[in-house]
Image 1 (cartoon, each protein chain N blue to C red):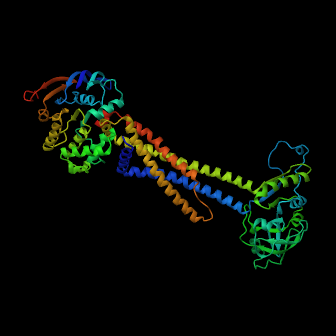
Image 2: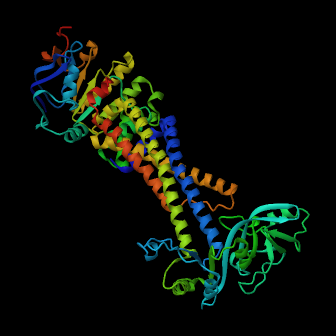
Length: 231
Length: 403
């Protein structure tokens, strides 16, 4: 479903060329649950941004659902993001002046979904995530775990095929983090491709496939339990 | 994205950033209010002046000696010939024309007027009995100049109320004798205070029969000749008749200027419309300044909401949608500012109207429409740059807060 072929992304920082991604080849299938780990600067965020179509590779191909995305214009990329990609960020990125309901609605508003349909879908998702009584709260009236669940609701409201989570539990305590992971895994169980970038071994261990990166290269790509992984 | 949602989201972020919204609203409303107030004043002045002229009668024709229009070289100029005088005989000839209701020749000069020990230099006007109805004068005491032949220099005079007070502090002007230059005149009337005329204060005048004034000033030529037509419709016909008659009497030389009160009115109208336009232009500058302020504040808003722009892009917003969102904010603000400015402007105009009841203030509709259009247009123009800057933000950098 996602095919990355000899993907590179280079930045020029001052005089120096930084290879954030260096000849990465990866394939992901629908329903995969993948953890992506690596030290800071290993290229895992850049990988996530490129898969999320927020960034373009310097060279190589990215095929999403059978479609090569490398030659697409900004508006086509935006349309693909809208339909296929959901983002969950470490710092939630909720719009502070909007209620939980309005935040969740936002992708549908941008996509032009009619209000009645929006209401129906938001009601369902709020119930699924145990947020039904929080619909009219603004982010500053919600706990961290609740905020991240609102963000997850927003990421999945367009029923994307890929869910990209960048340190989803990084700002949360243990209990809230577990709730958030449960919510993400419930979506994965319904067939969504879940990519989780994390520093936390415990979080990474819950995935079924593990990608390790260093200096822009994939150094390990292993399926199965995390038992035998190097730290 | 639906328009309703666009406006809702834009309105929401304006409501949230209350201080900056209010600041921009004030700037824009001051601009619009300035246009409304200044054009109201200009329009008020125009209506006041044209109203005053209309009060003098639109059926009036004024004859001036000499030509005011330039129509090339006139033959007489080479001979060193001056324009012929407008004489009392000319006035009498005009007075006999069909369609002429009444005439009032005018001779004006300044002379020392003395009563006993008191003496004062005042403007002296020589005219006829018909000056009174033409100028809508009314008397406080006594009567106006007696009707009769224009060339009879009866030694009577009518004094303005101010002259009366100064020369006869005891109020015994009527029947007294005053000396004007070398001649003696009997005071037969005092003007009432109500008389008004553009250019000079009737209350400072002394009015004598026209031929008496000619003798006092030793001058044959008339300063003006007022001709009143039967009605307004006959004005053009009478004007042409007067012009033809005087041309014939002056050996075919068209050496007088005949203007109608309507033409004077039209001239003043044009002058005041130009004045109002100028004021509107000056006030528009403040609208442009408000527009630049909107641009600055929107630029700040964009940099404050960089992360939000990044998020919108991550959620699938196209560049045009982000432009539209920020532009909608600027336009909503300028429209609200225009509405507040109109209210403010009308309120201020109303207050001015209360303070100066004689001034018929009221903003002309074109100025109101123009002010609102410029306000909204400046919202669009000055909102566009910040909005496009937002749309061009790189989503990765915007989300990470590096920019």
